[in-house]
Image (cartoon, rainbow, N blue to C red):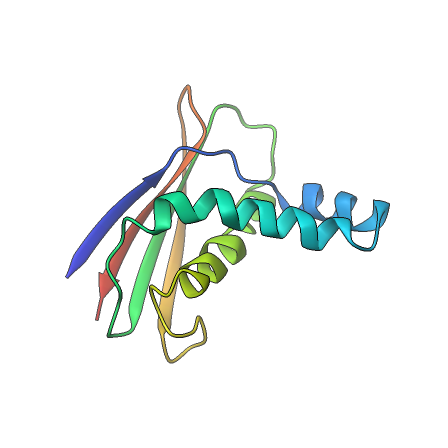
Length: 118
């Protein structure tokens, strides 16, 4: 089965996360928890995956200021939220068999997940 989910959020980059972690030893954990809570609203719209999945992340940015590798770091938050919401058992290689990243530019920041259950 194939599923598509659009998340209309600008997720933090790796640089944003590192900066917060350096400011306070608890701030990184708090930031991650807040992001996962925001993501859960959208992730909960997905079914529970019984089989391994492959995900195409399409990162839509409103400008070209952020480095691509910093943008795609946010997949960590998305995969962890999939597990926390009970949509898959784990995000290790037995359950996530691959992913790709694509980048587009538009007026609004968002990430689009195209999920294939294999």
